[in-house]
Image 1 (spheres, rainbow, N blue to C red):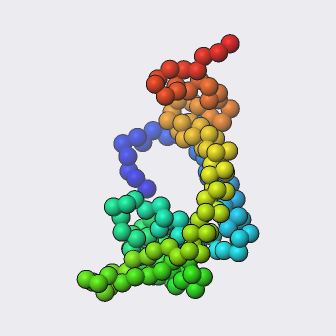
Image 2: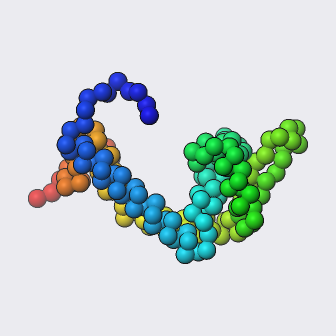
Image 3: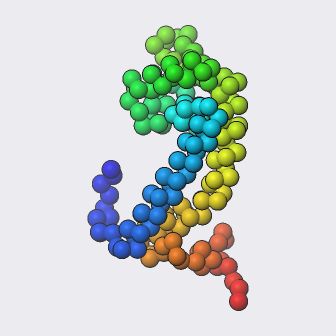
Length: 164
C-alpha cells in the first residue's frame, strides 16, 4: 500500500464508491474466469498469455517481468509457465547472450484463446466500464457515487453535457 499524504479518513460516499468499485471489478474478473473455463482453459493461463500480449513494447516478456505484472513470485510464475507450455500457449526462448534469461512468446493456441476472450473482455468492459469509472470518481472526495448522474461530469473539452 502506498503511504500518500492524503490521510483523511474516507467519507461514507467514498466507502460506498470503494465498495462498488470492488464489487464491479470482482464481477468482471469472475465473468472472465467463467468465460475462460467455458473454453477449456485455466484463468491463470489466460492471464499469462494476456500479460505477454499486453506488455508495453519496451518491456521484455521475461519470467521476472511477467511475474511482476501478474503479482506472482518468481517460482510460482515458472510453475505457471510450465503448465501453460503443456497446453501450447506460450513458448520459452533462452537468450543467446545470457542463457539464464528466458523470454516468452505466444503460440498459435494462445493467440486463439486471446482472440476469443478479448472480445468477451471488451464487451464486459463496455458494459461495466462506466460503473467502474463512476466508482473511481466517487473516491475523489466529490461525493459522486453509484447513484450520481454521469451526465453532470465534464466531457472532453471541458464542457458539460447540456439538455432539458
